[in-house]
Amino acid sequence: MTKATSRRITRVTALLFAGAVTVAIAGAPTVSAAPVTKTAFSLLLGSTGSGSSSENAFVNESMSVTTDAELPGFSRFSSSSECYCTVSWTNHSTGDSGQWKSGGTFDEPPTFTGSGNISATVAVTPGITYLPGQGSWVAP
Image 1 (tube, rainbow, N blue to C red):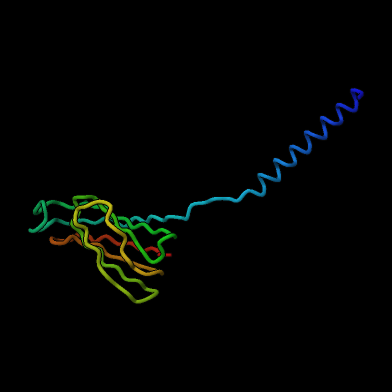
Image 2 (tube, rainbow, N blue to C red):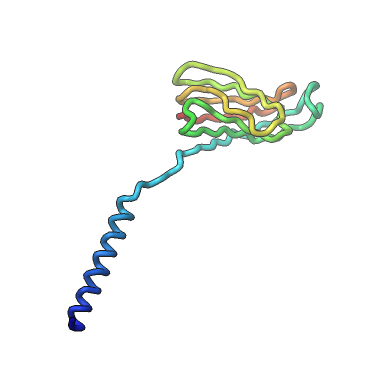
């Protein structure tokens, strides 16, 4: 075998290998996580009343809601452990409404709000709300 033939075989082998790798990469399935959306509410200001762990404490709280495309119709509300708050939500797409009460615990289960356009108002309960928190989001 001559040097020229050996080089051609090496070149062809390299091209075939590169082509096989390209086909394998291009044909590989893609993996992606379902989108998770987090929405922050406007600021909540108030003071707690009797029945909470800290009576007459000033509340300066930022609530949020998280939705997950893998849990359609569910919304997960979250706040700090010091916020004894009530979220009153309305699903404008279905007409359903409800409340979620923060009990000062973390990692609470999601609430079924239904899919659609949802808005909510947050108040300090028990206590006095000076400025209610507000937010709106779309649940998948």
